[in-house]
Image (cartoon, rainbow, N blue to C red):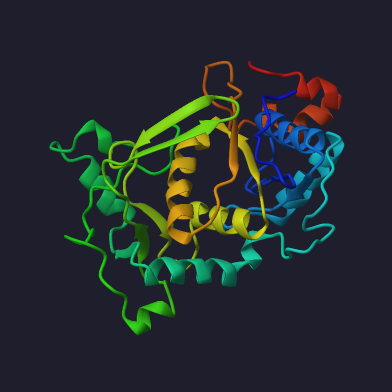
Length: 299
């Protein structure tokens, strides 16, 4: 059995959350199989949610391929975009109103503020000679510690009525409580601890192009869909710390957390969707059976 189960299980609800930005690889196969196994052993339900918020890379053909590859692996789910369920839609690009309501709640509670910094601005700030190593990007995290360029001097100001209507035009950031320790027990990797302001800073919850961030969308979906346990890769441990802060701010109950160890390539790097040789689709074409794909642990 993959790890221990949490004591707090009224009705287990786990989820699969593929992102259709490429073909799923071996690492995805092992993580999703673990999620399905834990839902089955807990006698609960498994929900499939298509996380297609990236408009530049998400493709319908990758979404279809993900469903096909997961079925080929022998996985089954109780709710999802292909079979429906009580929490439709199960495609993130169609859940904009839900995310907007969460953004408004954060704004009204003065947890977030508008940021005018572009990626170029942040790159320049992070490359400045006076910046410490803590602001540099983490190889397992896609968001470096924010240098605080647009952060309000004291507390986040009360929003104007017009600001409540539309978040577009700014990168909206969550103001983190600097120095606070975020601790949680991971059911696979054990106790975890992150220091706010050192391990991560004010993070984006809504992009200037009108797209909610992974952090906001994930918290909103896991709460509204009643997810009791999140199974995902260890590269998202820091995202979990951020999402715990969002859950606290929104009054949401934290799910349990189970982070799977990463599958590495021959160079010791984590697998990415650009590694076509490790994709489930390629392995299928090479004649691998599902059991053989799931037996691949490392390079």
